[in-house]
Length: 363
Image 1 (tube, one colour):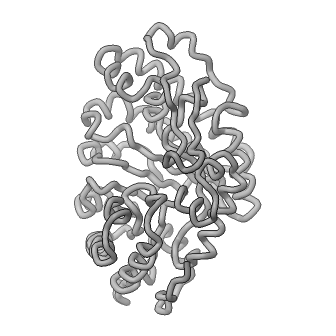
Image 2 (cartoon, rainbow, N blue to C red):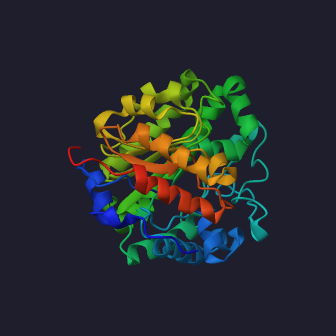
């Protein structure tokens, strides 16, 4: 696909723009991060099964997207949300032939509280996605990109181990069992991260902390405080102690009631908070203040099914709110950019971004 070069007004390169944003300095325009996985596979000409099974293919697809759309702020990405079951001895289903949007766990690993004691501690060197992520990190470091630390939260992985409905049920019926599982998963995530940090050093690592299961559409803020916050905080505290500064927190769904609790989680300054379409950019920006970067929150359904004019209006909506945020703003989809999004939508995003996304000189 060939796009008209809309970026003739740019006075910064994508790398310089990102470095300035991270440092809290002024930038010429809002960067756009497509949050692309399956879409990268599609443009590279491979199905999603090939993309997720083979980190070399995933990296090549990400590099292809970077070359095709240099106006985007993007680096090759790899991973999927439904993690945990495979790592702890369960099964994984691959999206071969583009049957699904991403890999997923088809069944729970344990179904009764009594089984938790027999759930083994997996070897972070060899279990589940970890060897694939290790290869992807080798490619990233060879090309000057940060190595990625384990994404997701203990809650997300615990929900995969139990099955999401059972996990939510056990938070009420068997809270002590859920805490015990959260402890086990937290230890696994930290041990997995240690392998990468010991190899590359914390300052050379980044992390995308996706937070889907903690949404207030699923649990209350009180439950987040009890079952989730302590473990997320422990992991973030470990990252901070190792010098990890490149952090993106993706609040998937509505986390408005949880925001006050994030103030006590040691997320490093200048981290990016990416929010779903259910959250208000203005309200979230007020909570974050100037110390954090706001990102979001293009409606995925509009990107997938909307007309060009609807897409442009959606981009403009995000820019009008996000550009007021004193900590800086990144235009992003509400979640992963739809893998089957029409290619014409890319052009509509670019047109609206370059029409409305430049800052005035007095910013």
